[in-house]
Image (cartoon, rainbow, N blue to C red; front, side, top):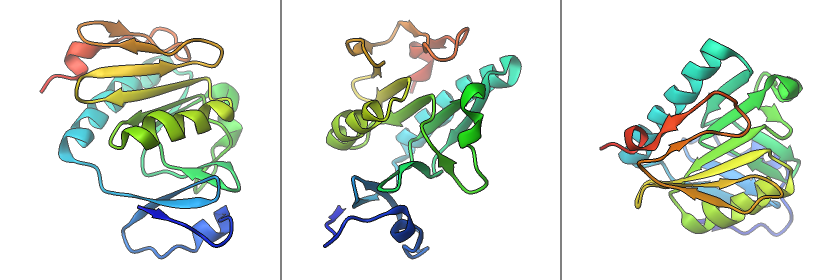
Length: 178
């Protein structure tokens, strides 16, 4: 659901939204209500987070977060990606309440193909995120976007290695297992 404002919304407006359990994102000054994810989405999110978190815990390199956590790309772009990786080199963006700036790697588990595979992909790329993954549950695949390179689609039984976190390898057969 899109809430069309009569003016461009800012983070200040967003911060005043009622705390009624509904989640919103603001993209280019427009508010988008984000429905609660389905169970399969959450299970996939947990498996993906565990892969990344274990690697970061063992090897360092940054910090990994899961939604809901506000990422302020700008005053009129406030998003809550499913998984967020902030490298040590960008640690200054980590605040007490949110992230203010561009994370290193963003991951969305696709629930709305237009929003996640087009609108948010274009937004993240325009802000210079190093790597963006759109994880599509069915059919199982991951679209990998890195600035300056053509999109790459990876499917099970392949293993995937993020460019921004050397040494991490994710077995897609395990990730997408029912």
